[in-house]
Length: 89
Image (cartoon, rainbow, N blue to C red):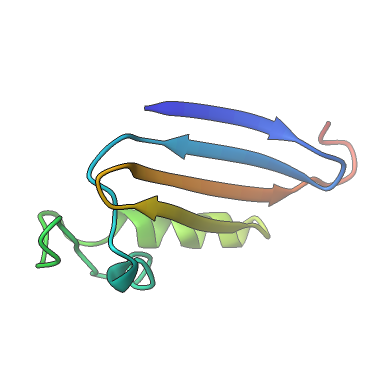
């Protein structure tokens, strides 16, 4: 897993990258939905389906955005962008 943190004049950007099994384009649109669970076969995965949903809510409460880029058998990168406000950096 790789974690990157950088900023520009407008936002703080976090990237979390893994080299896991990746997420199919068919399912990627749903991964931030409440109670959504995913595994490599596309069936319901383990857990409650709250983690990515809560992450999205927290990021949005800070005025930011979260997105994912993924490719099967290559891995996923989650990108979180939080706007910088006066006096932050």
